[in-house]
Length: 224
Image (cartoon, rainbow, N blue to C red; front, top):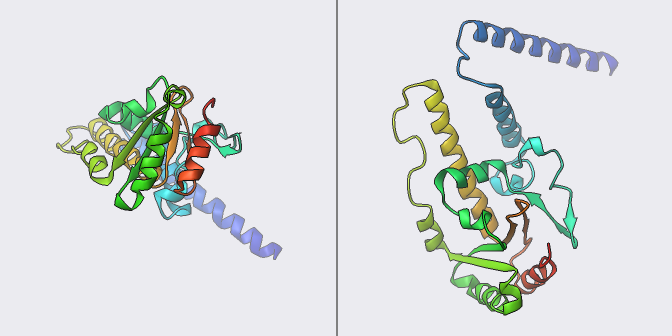
């Protein structure tokens, strides 16, 4: 067993040495010109996220959260509800496209969900609950049908033109990636319901679409 572990460590060390040599050659030959440290960090984060998760729904609010934030926002609870930071890529997508800015730049907490005919009762319950004066002062509610949500995301924010430099290509790639992250994050939230706190850039997601649990959560988060 010890010999097997030792062999594994030797293999790992050899692999890392090879990677270092390849990167050194690439750097001195100018192949990596235009790439910064952030590009490698993003690539590493995307790789580990893709390897450990099979869908965005599994990693939204966990590994998608900006690694630079450490554990802040991931392990915190409020009134028994798990809170998380809105992923940095989502906020970049909002700032770049100016879509959905009202969800993350509001003086009140915002409530977001997507519904269809089968969940119209859920929508009616939330709308009625938040129609009172007391709740209106704490929340703004944004419930969208599937069609209205899709129409909000119409447009091309990706690589629509041929880029003329590595920096320009990277910028286009970043915009496309952030737009995709923003859209997928809202789809994930829309499956149940999310409450956003713009003052802290944090959110709480309803675990299951249940009108009674949703109104209870809204009641508990009123002073969050």
